Image 1 (cartoon, each protein chain N blue to C red):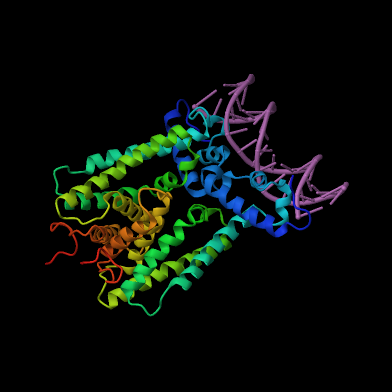
Image 2: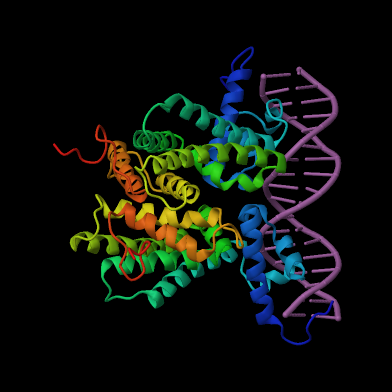
Length: 208
Length: 208
DNA sequence: GTCTATAATTCGATAGAC
DNA sequence: GTCTATCGAATTATAGAC
């Protein structure tokens, strides 16, 4: 009912992607049927196939776009010229902010990798590797500059990312800690972990 | 073929649990059929129902036993009398060692929580909360003793657990780093994150 | 204790009317 | 662009033979 006359194609396409994302996050890819997605959108199951070739590509598009969006957002937020400490703080705050606004996508991206075809899996992994390299480069430069002390920048970068992304498993909007406070706490944890001092301008509780 | 004469019930029960664990870890709970599990064990699908009431309890038993085993193992490994720094190092090494030997169970425990019934979910969550409290207590005592510096012990405990558990997503036996080296690296990261020094006896690279 | 056979659903995907 | 109807295959779980 209340169906738009004329072309509602673009709108329907967006709604299908949104419904798939919501349902995949809640129940898991394998547990969600095309009929459920259709019902969520308000169309019949057959209509979905006007917008996606099959269920698999509904998932693959979601994951690939998520990683591309993440990398593009970081390219927009990064500041190349900054010193390693400032770059690390920029990264920590960026990562937390970006991920807390996309909890569903983050969850799906971590859980449903094994449901991708081999080809799509490799694409996502390549993008993920690029993102991990961002952190590894920051740590490497910081060690070279003598401001960080880490035994293994590769492992430390994975440790930091896991620590930061873990926030999405417990964070609830309106919870005990506001996002700004969470960012500060995790900046302190991250800088401590890599043996560095937060930049004076915005780091841990200023001395004065 | 080669079926045991007489009672192979106990053996079959174990094999069913092992097959379910392996397949759930590889493909996900919803994507695995009872027929697949039966084939892995070498019986027909109908025979599974002599050992489990349904597919759901196959998962629930796995997750609940995993958490109970984790808590029991920690009770056996902990040393109550130790100072907070030693307790933290004991915990970090215990957590890594325990989890790296149970990668499949860890993965399932994190991924399949939403496929539990409400009652089983609450049981698992209660056990998980107990384990998180172990770390929070160590951090709290360390702050009180002046050997750690953390702004929020609750958040820091979740951050540490996420960081440590993340190892299971990339660790491969025979990889670049042996387990002992990984433990050392993560001890350093953990002590740095909480602003503490590793205990002299076994902490970061000894001065001599 | 295990098998075979099957009931009752549900699935992904397609065909064709409108 | 969407719906209805449906195909063929898969699903969980049970019944009853041995």
